[in-house]
Length: 339
View 1 (cartoon, rainbow, N blue to C red):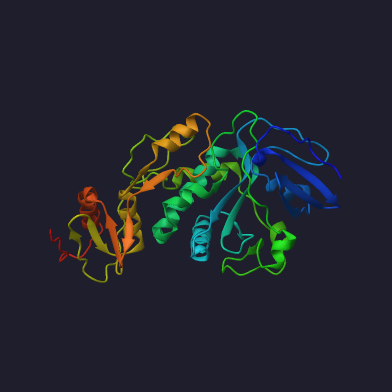
View 2 (view 1 turned 60 degrees about the vertical axis):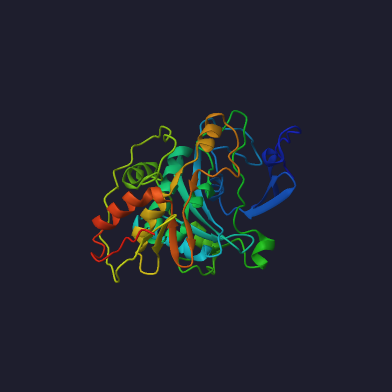
């Protein structure tokens, strides 16, 4: 059995090693938790490593640079299957190869995107954020908190830091319970996971850069409270209001807050309205500048609520909501009673 050096005084999440337990089998240890995943080939093993830190039984060296071989998005809400399916559909439309997995607990899912070469973590996160933003155009229920469940979880790695911890797929004990297995785009378990993994395509850095330029920004349409930090590429302008098909007149009530019925509200419009009540969390960016943990610190703060079949927004969003609905060709007999 071969183990990498164990650092006694590092936090539990950073105490990691890779242990070879049998030919083709490895165990990843992060503190007291042992996670295991078979390794069909070295090319597949390296895909499953969040940052470009090469750990093998033969060597434990680190490669400098805030780069990653993969991007993972985590969905853990009650309707995670619908959220994961919507994200996979966005990837399909954008021709992004994605591997879907049911989590170990069977109460969530992961979407994995692998790269042919390591890319900057900030670029990978912008890819994930753009795909999530576009997914919300079709399924607003994905929510603003989905941006906090991307791996890598930060753009840069502090000196001496280890990175992020995410459980690898195909763990034997979890698979016996139906978890940690690969899924198809119908969110059904695939019968041959190793052939499915081996057949997975990977995204080239050039394709990532091209797509990120065309994807909508994560901050699009927000009531921004803090300036966005510098990024590698400038996203295209995606502020054009979509023209949608309205089936019923919309009655909006403006009183203590703005009440908008959601029954006949198109998903693309609902997504825009939700973002009017969200803003960037300045604490998140302050922590990031200081290389502090953002665990439990959301990137975005939303003041929108849903209750009794209505979308409830702050009164201050009224003018933007009215402008958006007019540009989207909403029914002319829409009413704005003021109580």
